[in-house]
Image (cartoon, one colour):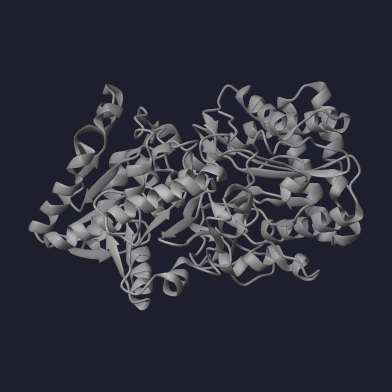
Length: 604
């Protein structure tokens, strides 16, 4: 499972590969091409054959886009990757731009030649995305042109084949609801809204509604496929049938008709010929699909994926499962933290050693299916790279006097985990203690928040930043993201961020992960997962309020806490959390580990 990233995607090859792509574009009479970090499903998780941005540029982050014109090129990344991208990309070939502050559309307006033909693969861009890019190209006096075949694929000689991982049923004891009931529930909603058919393009929605799991992308049990849900309660699944064994075929039963993936186009055209009203999500649906429907005569209704919200609201079985997964994971993480405390100060432990050892502790549970993402194991200055991925070239030892940031997670059948701890190796400095405690204050601010129904993550985001803001500090990422149930570690529509406008609902799982990063020195992040609790009375209050139940169980490094910066209520929360951690995890630990945990979770 653990892997580093020494492969054919590196900066030295970017110049040559970009030149080859330009030759192919010239051969086709095109002036430029858009290369998003995306596949046909528009998700964060893509299989190796769809890692086009990484192959071309060397950048291996989970979000970004490159634009290649005849005489210039640019790569766009968000705030998580502004440091990383400069170490992975040939800066003589690609200008680096901020994806949000300097978006691709603006760059196109300023750089596309008049009458220039800027090409895009319609499978790799959403409806919303294409509209923005087309407007920019036209403002520059050029045109956005779809291509039938991807020109980058034409110059990627050793491109891997599409994945063929086996699809398995996801047991109802973990799912909490049979697939047939989910399908009929969604179908009823479609009919009530005047929609005949919904197109599902996100594999996590398909996995959720059909209670199936796959292994087509790294670390997330997704079966790459497409589906149609109809108002009469029937469904069509378009998938390479070599992935399907007898067990999953029986599981899908009579309410799901199986088709080869290539049959999707014909099915969309049939919906058009019969003038059906078809729902597509403009934020996630490939523009190819919408165009196929429109051209065939369908009424295309734009709206949210009908599975996204019900998937995000976990049922009782899913919540019980994630509690069990976090208890199991907490024992493994505590063993790891004790190992770090014992071994790292002596020297000889590297970032790679630590990541491998943490995965080994999780594997010892006997329940680990996979890690939920590549472990972020960042010592010293590497911890300041928000989504750092260790390589043999960047691998650092954990040194006394430095901080070590480890962000990791696991996939279990009963739940998905994601947890970050920042650890002082040896004695931390006063600045590190100050910054850590300010991050902790923000973490506690989210954990203890009470809020009325209808509150969005954007309304809570400042709770996590206030102590940092008061010191003139901040962090350039969201405070929390949704998490799936043995699915994606990053799940929508909910999030705690300046852009998190979806109301939080009971049963949603989100992360609570404020941070602080000092470039060239260290990074700090404290992350627990929390589940939104139902409205409940507040003593002496007039309105019912929602809140959060913390799911993650693991010690927070007390060596980094400056108690004088905490209020009495914050000290009370930290002590109560640590008492809960100690009580929950001790039964799974031997005597030596119990003793270490007791000290690590002592009251302050």
